[in-house]
Length: 191
Image (cartoon, rainbow, N blue to C red; front, top):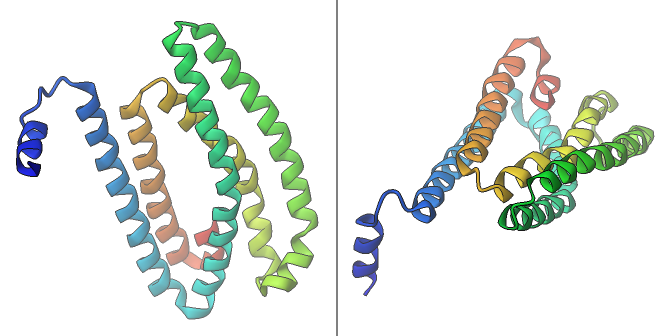
């Protein structure tokens, strides 16, 4: 039974968007995960135990920030796909622009609150204040970033979404290693 389904999948019409788009996203996710794995290997070797543990704390903060924001991506995907199905492209444009404005405004206030909490957070997490200061702009980008991915996913532009994901991990890997390898160390990894 399973063998029959696998044969049907591989012999399926290559123009079928369901199979093609799923394979595109599968390959992109595999590249992103492999890139993240390589990033952590290089960071562990280049930074050493103390700085790598500080990077782990910084990455945990980023992951915590991204959890509620990913719900926004899911909501935008759902609404954009509904507008696309109803052929209401003008509403998609309005939704994405409005989301950028509102979430950008919210992200700006989150950035201010984050910066005010840097001294307390630095003492609590035992991370230098400069590392949290360098992290600050990422707070804004983390809040606004999922709008693009949600819009691409809702419009079913999976190649563009996959390309966005692969470019993101490639830049993270290349810049991360370059900035850490130069004199920046942990600050370069955060950047």
